[in-house]
Image (cartoon, rainbow, N blue to C red):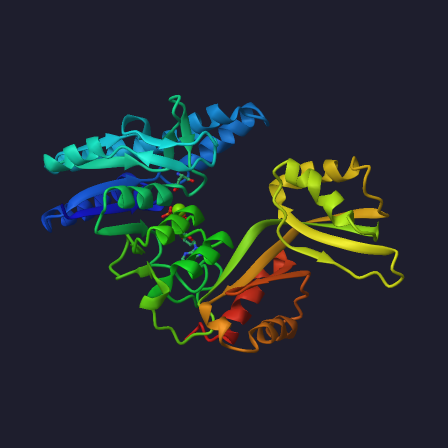
Length: 404
Ligand code: ADP
Ligand code: ASP
Ligand code: MG
């Protein structure tokens, strides 16, 4: 069977007119004799609205009820798409994750898919039907609804493509493909024609939400080629694939930005072996992820400053954990919510000297102070004041010739 999995994001199904347009796109694949499996997200804004409602009910909303609530938006968009396809003469029906089932672990809010029972989907394809599958949703062994993390319908689509041995997996979204940076931050952003899994994974986990990072990891592990393209305009989009399929002469492939970091500095920490472990152990026990860490060497050998970043949603909890940590002695704690991480990503930097220097020089010319740094083989991230994001991205984009 020539199966294609096509996924539509929130903006692509954001209105009745958009849903009619999506039905036409699906119909084109049918006319080209494909067996089409559709995955849809909720209409744009709906999931956010449900999240807000849960916050108004309780600041500690039960996580199992949270997933039942926030997964509801996908039911609406899927039935509207199926209804429209029926209207224009196609056999189609919506399928919620629990009906298939798409089985996950019980890590509510951020569940991982363990298995998809493809039998009902295959049977439906055999009779010529177009299943419209709810993205973002799963179900536990005990029958409780789960969700796959924000943006998780990309992940649904990729695991479905793997399970169904689809020949194509296409992610339809509101941009023409994966761009050199978020076009909402820099209008000079250019489409990347082909990108490696590794670079895409770094970009997604460093803030480029065009693809959810779990989904990229799954595509990489299973060697599934993914096409990201627009449901609004005709463009061939971006191919995400193996590194060896790519010829790229750019040093940097893309620039990503996060907007949810917070910086914590402990000033005047007694400098002795084991002190960093004493600071980070309670954070680890409480599932708080620490990202960048900087420790200044103390001039006198007795006291030091330790700076680290966390997700800003964890800031209040971190403040309390540090205040009540009797194992660490320091003079004061400083917090900053107004910071952001800007990262340059590209396999080209492995073989090109001077990339770090060019990044720092470019930021310094714009008088942007670097608060922390972290690197890996294919990325360099710096922490800066959030108000400087646009200036930083524009200057780095130009420095690494991504404008061209
Ligand atoms: P969907 O609802 O289709 O899943 P998302 O809003 O999750 O769409 O992702 C698309 C958005 O990602 C774009 O509108 C764009 O603003 C943002 N974005 C961030 N970084 C990039 C990038 N490097 N390339 C393309 N889009 C990006
Ligand atoms: N509707 C979900 C969200 O807003 C899933 C998705 O968009 O992929 O996070
Ligand atoms: Mg998305």
